[in-house]
Length: 383
Image 1: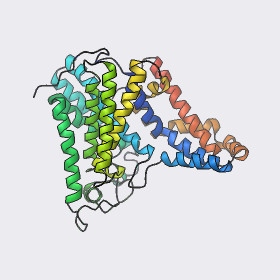
Image 2: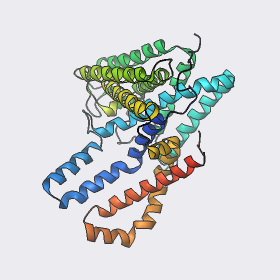
Image 3: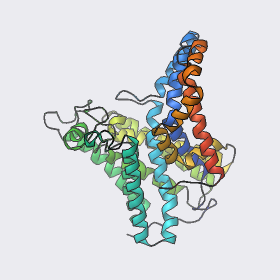
Image 4: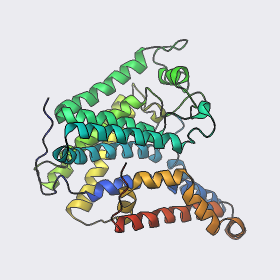
């Protein structure tokens, strides 16, 4: 098939949308320390009145993953990053195809995929603990695979076919998980460890699994995550159509709402489980991401009523900040500034959790300051 075309519109296809960077920044901010800061503040709040303790406890719960079935706010973070990765593909690839040969573009995609995958392996310790402890799957590894497959499909098929492929992936995954029994397990079992995806990881995935006997970023559960990335790419295509911006906003919100409703309905038969990235989970989260993108696009790129500059800074160098956080660099510097005796003083003066809260806050502030420094100097570290 021919490559899809991307007509000009009021915001040009090669323009950088602030809303995309801001949402990418929002996801990274949650990952690199905001969740820990909320948990520490909830601990600090235990000395406060009952209503305050309950409110902070609820927020801390929302910034942790649901144990298995169901959704917490934090369960939207990873899908948001993958969804925005897909939207970014829709903006970047047409520009790249216009300036490079197809062979060069293929090589670029492969190089970026391999580099992102390698960074993911390093993020979890690399080979430092021996080959048996290497984590071959993880956040960046999953993003790399989703980026690779979505990019190749995006280059060769039109958006309508991409939508069909995304739906087919979700249906196929649902059929596989509910109809094919793993050895010694009943067909359709979706319990922790006792399901097809976890069995495949234990049997065929080398190295270290995150939970020892299962991995939330395993082999089979990466397949529906590809559909999440493809849905993000379709949102990116919509953002570049010759339509009134207000109509684009409405379409994103309407499509997102339809995805949420469809996902919730599907969840009655195929439960919403992040650790398995069930098809219902993929639809609900992608739908929510589309709605959020529509709102942020309207506020930031159309009306210019909301800047969220600091989120844009973070989103522009998201992977760099993620790696630096994962290697503990921000925590190390924060510890030298407010750790030790300073932390002990905070604990004595403000209560349990004060030191951890301030450490997380300083580490996040350092990440934001570095993001600002890079952004204002036009430094965007690409993979």
